[in-house]
Structures are given as C-alpha cells and as structure tokens.
Length: 471
Length: 131
Ligand SMILES: Cc1cc2nc3c(=O)[nH]c(=O)nc-3n(C[C@H](O)[C@H](O)[C@H](O)COP(=O)(O)OP(=O)(O)OC[C@H]3O[C@@H](n4cnc5c(N)ncnc54)[C@H](O)[C@@H]3O)c2cc1C
Ligand code: FES
Image (tube, chains in turn cyan, blue):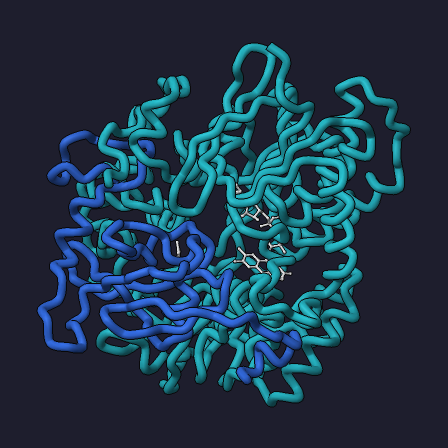
C-alpha cells in the first residue's frame, strides 16, 4: 500500500510550519496536523478569527513572516487543524499517524506517511507550593495563551513569578493589555536588561519592547524573589512573596493582594509521540529531550524531531530546526537538496546559546523548602507531600515506586504536572514516562484500532484501559 | 473596549451567549470555553474527587486536565481545548441562581472515567480509568 503522504508533520508551531513548508518546497507531499484550531503553536498563537483583529501582530514579534509561511504552506500541502494525534507507530514500511478530528466529536482518522516530523513543542514546568492549586493560580504560558489566543487578560491584579526570560513577555503582555501587574519575580538572579539573554539571541528589538512596556507600566522586575505560598478559600486572594538566597531558600517574606498569579519555571519538552516510537532521550539539564543528528533525524528511521522536542530553545531556534528537518526528510526520500552549511551553523550557534541560557536559569533545590506536609504534589490524584515522604520512608527508591505507592502521576495528566517534582523529591534520574497515548481518546476510537505494541520494559505503563472516557 | 482587544484593533463579529448554570455568558466566535468562563470571572467549574477542591484553568494548553468541564451533559471535556458553541449549556455544580439544587458534580466526574492512557490498573478506583 502506498502511504498517503511523503511526510506527516505533527505540530503547527514555528518548527512544524517551517519543516512542512521546506519539505513541500523540496517536492515532498506533506500533511501537517495540529490539535489547535489555528496554526501558530505557542509563540505564534493568534486570536480567534471572530475577533477580526486588525493588528494581530501587536502581541507577537515576527507574526507577519510566520503568517506568510502559513499561506505558502496552505497552497502546497494539506493542513489539518483540529486534529489531535494520539499515537504514531510503524505499519509496514510506513508510519501510521492516529488522530482524532474535532474538539468534541473525535472522529477517528489514520494517516500514513513515509516519514514523520514531530514538532509538538513544550509545556510549562510548574513548581508546587502551598496553595498552588487554588483557582487564580495559572501557568505563565497559560496566561500568555489566554491573551494571545482569546484576548482575555488573566486577571486585574496580577503577580508574575518563576524563572527564565519568558517572564518578561508575560508581564509586559499582561500590563499592555490592561492588567495591573504588581511585579515580575525572578527566582534566579535578575539579569540587567543590557545583559539580557534575548539580546544575545538576536532578539534585541523584542527585548527592548518588553523593557519599555514594563517601564511604561511601572512593573517592577525583581531577582531572587519567588511566590512561596498562595492564599484564598476558593480562589486566590493573596500571595506570599519571599526574598530568596542563592539556593532559593526564603530569607524574608511579605504578602501581596492579587487575584491572579502567573507562574512558570521553564518548559518541559512534549515528547510523548517520540518516546512511543522508541526515540532515544537525553538529559537536557534535568529535562528529557529527544536525541537528533545534524539533520534532526532521531535514531528511528523516517522519524524527525524539531523545536522544543529536541531541547527547549525558543521560537527562532525552532524555526531553524524545522527547516533543517524538512531538508533532511526531502534528501532522505531522494529529492535533490544541496547542503546548507549556513543554516547548520545558525542552528549550532543558537543551540549553544539555548544551553547557556538553561545554565543561567537553573531551578535551585531550595524550592522544596516551600512545601508543607499537606501541599499537593500531584494535583490530579491529590497526593500531598506527606504521602510521598511516607513512600520514601517505606523504601521507595525511584519515581516509579513512589507512583505505585502514592498514585502521584497516575491521574488525568499522567504525571506531566508532577513528574519533575516527584523526580526531584526522590532524587531520581530523568523523568521519562512512556505514555501509550499522547492525547486522551474515547473508548470506541481506541477499540477500532489494534493496540500499539507494549513495551515489556515498562510494566506500569501497560495497555490502555478499556474503561477509557465513557459517554 | 477591553485593552487587549484595543491592542490588536479587534472588531469582533457579533457574538452569542452560552448558559452557565442558568447564567448568560458572552462569547466571541472562536474563543475557547475556558477563556469564556475565565473572562466572565468564573475561576472554577468543578471540584476534585477527594478533597472537593475547586478547579479551573491552570496550564491553558490541554496538558494538566484541571479545566475539565461538563457541557450539554457531556462530562470531562477540557475547557481550554474546546471552542464555545451557540447553545452550549455548562453545569459546574455551583448552586443554581434560581435556587435549584446543584447537580451532583462529584458523581458526574466519577462516571466520566479517565483518559484512555497508560498505567491502567483496571478495576482500581471503582471503575475510573485514569489510574
Ligand atoms: C503555553 C505556552 C506559551 C508560550 N508563549 C510564548 C511566548 O509568548 N513567547 C515566547 O518566546 N515563547 C513562548 N513559549 C515557548 C515556546 O515553547 C516557543 O516559543 C515556541 O512556540 C516553540 O516552538 P515549537 O514549534 O517547538 O512548538 P510550539 O509552538 O509549542 O508548537 C507545537 C504545536 O504542536 C501541537 N501539538 C502538540 N501535541 C500535539 C498532538 N499530540 N497532536 C496534534 N498537535 C499537537 C500544539 O497544539 C502546538 O500548536 C510558550 C510556551 C508555552 C508552553
Ligand atoms: S487548563 Fe490545563 S488542560 Fe485545560
């Protein structure tokens, strides 16, 4: 059977769109799938069409160029938005991409291709603290997504906290959109704007824009500060902000009234589909990232990865990696693609910079001292710190044993929110979870397909349940 | 106009309203249900199984499952991942404005079962699949 396409691209952010466009320009038959209703991914998330935004680029740097890429792509490839991919597996000589179409109806669909490029991005890394599950506490990326995609300002009195350069666009965006941003609190040392990593990353104009916005709205940007507790009965009313020592242990605290906290400690690559496929994973400063060669090939034939899945590096690097992957896929399928050493050198430079950035904004161990015995570690299964400590005292030596004893990481999110925390608490190695299903699907959809082969090495990640979501 | 809309020079299409526990809540076509609820000042729309703790948006991009919502009787949809549609009726389990008792939300959540996924220990958790 001939596959439907030469290349299927999963993810329509900067990496996926660049990869799909490059591959189609090189002559491949390409399909791009994304679960969202519009292309853009996280960085280029655009307002719903119903807003008829005259200047959608006001919230993004470089949106026009991306929009042109999308137009060119739509003219030469199939773009399937609203398609959630829950598994990719080998089927003979092709790869079968299993997805569900529609945000509620979930029409099952399988697409086959000779190659697959996985560019599924990343999600925020939250750190727990007392009260972090109160409504009104959201991730920094979540606040950004609300603003960019829905033109909803997350709150009226907002505190932004966490670590990394991403706090700046979040605080600046919220302030420009009318929120009273009480402060942006960087747990690491604050880097002066002149020394700010954005500048070195060739994003000077963007950084300057954030700086100006923060200054115009008098938003303080403070280093060695973190929100260590959120207060409120059924929604957030206050946060405790602590001054931190080098290791993030609180030195002194004060309380601030607010209705919203936007909080994020970096990003975690979204690599479920790649792990399913058996791609090798490396330790990227404590986070899992997929191993690729200079052409963004994973070790699995026909499978490519680009963007945050290969290590968090931001939108510009994601685009460059997408282009390299698109070229490699075309070359591997026999298209004539002359080498482009300039592109490769750009990637090397930007990736080296991303590594330096990760080193500049590490998560320091002192955050564990923010927790109390009753602080939830796992939000889904409501597992408090005390239960995890008990499991450790009982002799649980790794994250998997803790999971089995406490159910931490066994709920809806499958450990995406607590995986990092549990790994830190158990001093376990890299938290790589093999999830047989990357996106939730209904029972009927699952039953319609043969099961992907189970990995005998992961006894706790067994076959999908027949009691999947019932309706 | 809300400053976010002014910033991007939005000229929204005529919208519609959805029903949240009997209350009318405005929607701009294409907005996610989670954003619509959040914008209306509603910060939570379910309670957790064991602690009864309120939950609303957290990650905003479909990974945390905090935002599970019941729409038109269908439980456990991720509010941040679905578009609000004309005719949508959302039930949160909060007391109804006209005094009717709240739906037993805890039980809807129990019936909903988990996402099909790895690590199932079948039968545990009284038929819930999200183990
Ligand atoms: C919530 C959030 C907000 C962010 N906002 C910004 C910002 O404002 N500025 C900034 O500089 N950086 C931001 N980032 C960082 C972001 O990771 C990068 O800027 C950039 O978007 C990465 O590009 P990418 O192409 O690798 O992935 P992304 O842009 O994340 O694109 C990945 C795409 O894959 C899709 N996808 C994922 N899994 C599946 C699946 N199973 N099936 C189908 N589709 C799938 C997603 O819907 C998404 O559209 C944000 C990150 C997050 C998590
Ligand atoms: S808010 Fe996290 S899944 Fe919707």
